[in-house]
Image (tube, rainbow, N blue to C red; front, side, top):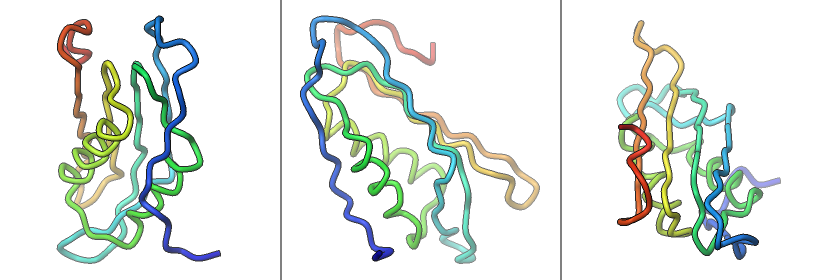
Length: 126
């Protein structure tokens, strides 16, 4: 199996678009590279969203997250990139992505970024 994964996020129609409900994913095997040292960074990526018309397909999400393994990213940048690309693919009512990175240099980093469609509830981080 090739280590190069496609970065395409596939979707499928929301089976209950008339209802607000939350989908939650925990991805504890996320890795990317430190852009300064080239050493691996390990994280749990947590994704919470209320879908609108589309839901993200899980195998494509797995392959998308694998695609970061050989790329250098700052924690803040990669977490924001994941949110931006998931929002672009699914156009959710709301979404939060959290990157919970293991300790590096004695510092534990958690980056949480959110998106909310106008008119769809309160900010989940408020």
